[in-house]
Image 1 (cartoon, rainbow, N blue to C red):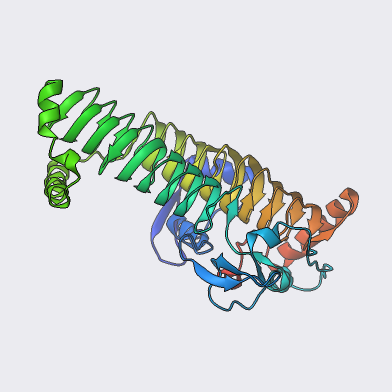
Image 2: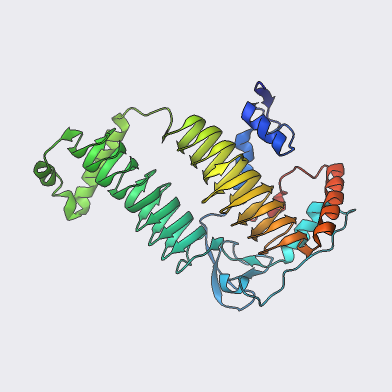
Length: 412
């Protein structure tokens, strides 16, 4: 099927609905969009407070806790220990088919305890957010599997990293960004499979290289000049002292090298039929950004191991499938629509807000291990199917179904 040209009703900008997006929309029973894909992603991102932290008081135990919900929120906030305990019962609502769904959902969210941070399976990582599998981390955000990391953002499988940005599967990074499968790389960008390097840019499979750009499979290179091991060691002797003034000289020279280096039209490698930027090991992607190991998807941002998905922001981790119009999706999740922060082994959810390890639920909030629930209320499997059919029919009639959450859930 040929691409379809559209005009965004919000911005007036023209955009194209690709053949892949049309197929995905058919699989999700979703109509053609009226809004530009960038605006759709922008809206999804509004439901994330990634890195602004506050001190708050847990409304259950009364102890001080770190929170993402601002000062004096008008809803209950529980610390991680209390939220994960059995000391409270999940509020629920009786569904009223004659009342707008989003009004009922707003009422449910307002009285349900919010967990203070978006953290799962963490240890000694209190001052972090949007993380899963963190240990001994501080001020680390939007991270999946990290250990001993500080001031790090947007990574996966990192250890002993400081000031690292959008990097993965690496150890001992410092002030580096967009690095992959690297070890002891400092003040660098776009280093892939590199070891013991400083101030390098767009280098692959390099060891002991400094102040160089565009290298491939090199050792002992300084200012893009091949040296012997001994000559290289002599060149970087002053760098290894850690002297601040010396580092500033190197940084200035590094910025000059980057500015002079010809930039590729896209950042990425080992891709097949993709459009977007910062894409690795992926195929059949349309308009996607910072995507790793993804396939057959469109309009993705900041996501890993995702397939057959559309309009999705963040995480993925060990794999997600068939996700539409969602933000912050956890490991091994599939068949999700219009969900915010659905973590770990979730499937067949719609319009859920901050739920963990749940399935076959609609319009639920801040619960864990939910199944066959609507507005947090438990139904039998048979009752769930018939009630959900009636609810969706009413939502379609009122023009609600197929729309993302209303702005009342944008707490930031």
